[in-house]
Amino acid sequence: MSPESYAAAEAASGVRIIKRGDIYWRRVRPFFYRPLFPFCGYDRRSVERSFPKLAAYQHAVLEGQSSNSYLNLIFYDDIRSYDGEKLHRGPVKNISCAIERGVKVRRLFEERDFCLQGYEVYLSFYHRTRYAFAKHRTDREGFEQWTKTLFRFPELVVLGAFSGTSLLGFGVACAVESTVIIKSGVHSNVGLELHSPDLMLHHWRLAARNDSTVATIYDSAMTTPGIDEFKRRRGAVVKALPAHLRASSVLLNAIRYIDKTDYDRLLGFESFGIARFNKTIPGRV
Image (tube, rainbow, N blue to C red):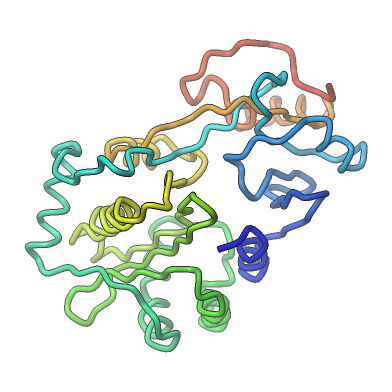
């Protein structure tokens, strides 16, 4: 999938995308942007020239450039050496248990079949997690519209985990150049009981191992300790990429005052096990 097609797919799914120069950006908060491909480093000066002076953004920098924050990103790097039997004991047991209970993972090609069962899976997921992004998908009409978007882009791979004919969970991923991007993983309560998340992740990693064009799997930025630990116990690694954060000192002071944890998460410091290297608030540099 080309970067242009991926940007179009994200925009069609409700993500607010802008393009500055040759770089696609996604809005992660009102008036605050990060690159659509956060694992790529970008030249600080080129980015500064492409944005208005009052813009707020954060991006990984090129090697050797100064930084004032980190982007903490989760990857699966052991592409060729991946072996599901060498994971921690828990995930190995979960994968074996799912297989023994007859859970199967396969690609979904039919929009209608996915929409019928996928909506109920999504509702189960939403009521359990209270997932805030794209709440409109909890309405059947909103979910149907999202489904149409997914299947409009054939490069997006939609996997379903099944027990017999019942859908337990689904995941969406795509390959952009040499990186597989896991876009989403949604599982029902029944799916959790039958360990469909572990089996689906196992499937993604096997597929990447067998594709010589894939260099890495990008999962997501770090989120909450529980979810992050789930991924790390399954072989994920966290990379702290030196980044440049540009925002007004007034705004950053306000964030720090309102929610110190949110402030540390934004800068990529203490909350994620990275020692604070500079107590100065990173304003415009």
